[in-house]
Image (tube, rainbow, N blue to C red; front, top):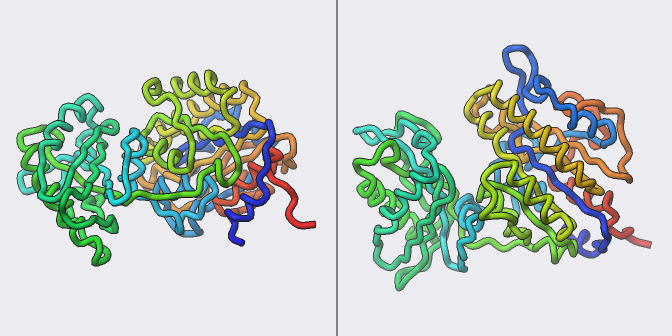
Length: 405
């Protein structure tokens, strides 16, 4: 019996409510003053919750492995991320409600800036606003490739999604490399197939890129595209099937709604949520309708990727204010953590373990008095796997039976 089957066999209903509050990229490293962003931030609500929590550090995938956002969230939802791979393309498509089908290949589009030599000068095209993205989408929708139906949808800011669907041509498989080298001063990479079955999809993706650059000629700053995270249609055992939960996701960014949807969560407030305050308003309005809520705070990760230590500190402090609003709803169990670390000094995701705290009436507090990487390292949860947090939330909420006689 594997771990998911074990949890399924022990799941039981209860009236308790669980909140998983994910502060994206919350973990950090010391800056110039010798403190991490969490240590430098004023977080009275997180620190007060730590006092009545069990704390620790978790590895989203495994020690030393730097996780993407998809694997990081899948682990927090209780899945083994190395067994349930979902590309960013499928996550982005699901996050905006695009109806993917078996046989589709989805990829995420990042609009980028190219110089006259075709080298990338800005991987995010100056973080163009969503409104500009929506102006560019019709240009890419005009692209035609024989034997393939192409769907292009705006996601948010500089991100879009493209879905390739066979239309009289060969079948498609999404085991592909990215065209984004994650460097500037060099041209985009060619998309390559990682197996024989994906060779046709690779040629389709490269033809699409070439035609997209031609279609965007004369645009500024978004005159090119990078393709990332190819994925076919994924299948996961859902929270309803595994745990009998009624789960909901409250997130402003489509990718996070996407991974939640594949886990069976209802994405709330898609047309209402633009800011984190909107997330909190939707959470309050729908509080009585579900027994599990995934609440996502994005901006800590964004500022970490920008390399802006002070801005990340400020976002952590805003996330702390958001925690106070969540606690006013009186969840029976709350877990606060991140999907990965994004130290400002790295300007990227990193492999460093992520602080976590779990609070509820049946939690054994461990004496930790602040929510920081160093303090949590001495907590009762120790250093655990990200996927092990979900059964601990369920057990604390009275949603797992005893195993064995």
